[in-house]
Amino acid sequence: MIVWMRSAVLVLGIVLVLSGVVCGSSPQYISLERGMCFGTCPVYTVTLFENGSVFYHGEKFVKETGNLTDTLTGSGFADILQACNETGFFHMNDEYVNLDMTDMPSAIITVQNGSGIKRVEHYHGDIHAPAKLTTLEDLIDQVVQITRWTGTGSDTTQEEQI
Image (tube, rainbow, N blue to C red):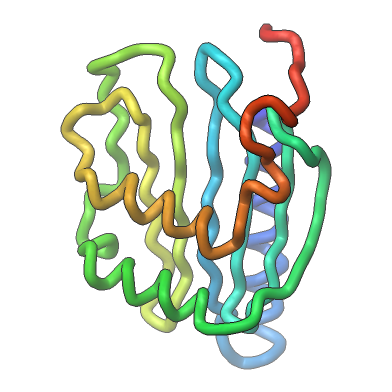
């Protein structure tokens, strides 16, 4: 299933790049992928575009599985982009994946702005990852109001562990 999710994100990225080629500029987006843990951590991808469009794909241990879209009003995209700058996201390592603790979830933030694409992979068992990275992941969830799709625990789907 992780392979399918990564394939979906890849296809989305290709569509975005091709859209930029046709329109003459690269569309700006911020994507957060949350990966599995040993327990029932929600597995989903959410992508927020500069125009306020939101694409969600819920996979496991979430209230809503499958694809959903929405449009956010306000400055959510700009707020996250500003937080990326303030936290030093664009200067962080590309990955924080040491296995200092096991069975923890992972997260990947990808940002495409006017300067290019930055992707940071974060395994939550890596004790050397900057705390600001987790704060940024949580901010993305807050801005898109992710709990409406992922639920809060008791209202999520319980799927068999592999």
